[in-house]
Length: 141
Image 1 (cartoon, helix red, strand yellow):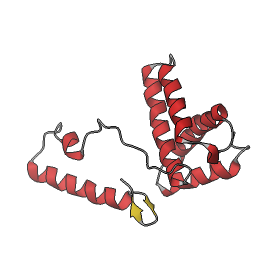
Image 2 (cartoon, one colour):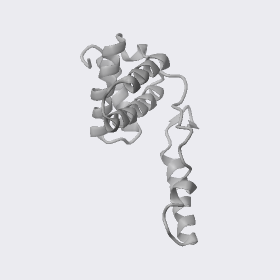
Image 3 (cartoon, one colour):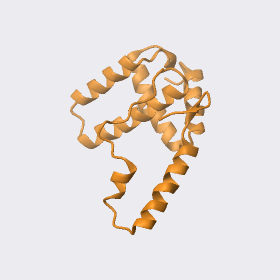
Image 4 (cartoon, helix red, strand yellow):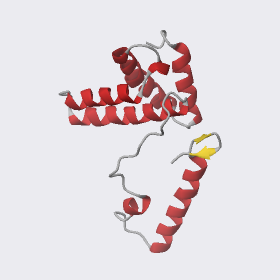
């Protein structure tokens, strides 16, 4: 599939590198997700739409693959949506799961002293602000 749209795959690979993703994760997302989606949908990377991705996700839900495989594939799809947004194929930033827990909620499961918790949360927020991808100078959610 990459030979059919080398420019599209190259742009996606560059976006993954800009996001700081490991080369192995980029290749996993491109080779095991983007290539399959483009093969199912047809056309080029630039032709993909939110509807095409949603239809693929629905077909994935209806398939009989093991739950762990489905979860892994959904992680690839989430990363693919991020890459497609970064290269401006998709107009809307990927949506977070509505049930995703906040940082504070995630840390409540870990027993630690309040000053340490405050320091860790502050550090993570600062790092997240620095590492957050930017489009046109405006940080995404």
